[in-house]
Length: 101
Image 1 (cartoon, rainbow, N blue to C red):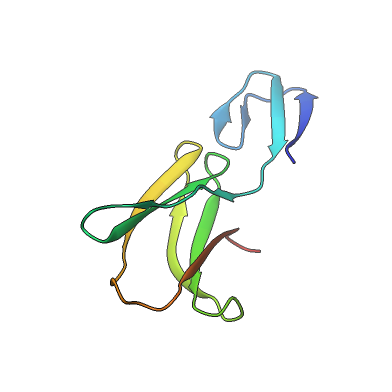
Image 2 (cartoon, rainbow, N blue to C red):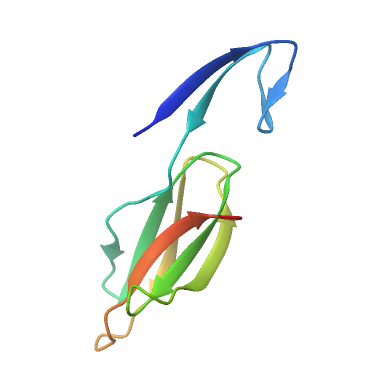
């Protein structure tokens, strides 16, 4: 669910983006799009979120223990990166969390 809040006041910037006295704030949750498998065995992972938000993509083989895979900051609302996956590798699970959570 996406929540939005309109704010008005004596400001010129919100979250590093130029806004002149009026802005809409979102309560975005991170979203992983379905992965894309390439012919070379790599998988493209797409994460969606709010521009300027810093997030950590994590990996797990058991859904209990999670390890950081990459830390990135959104420039736009979408970020994609390639992960090498061996053909006979065990199951891998991915999630994205906001940095600091």
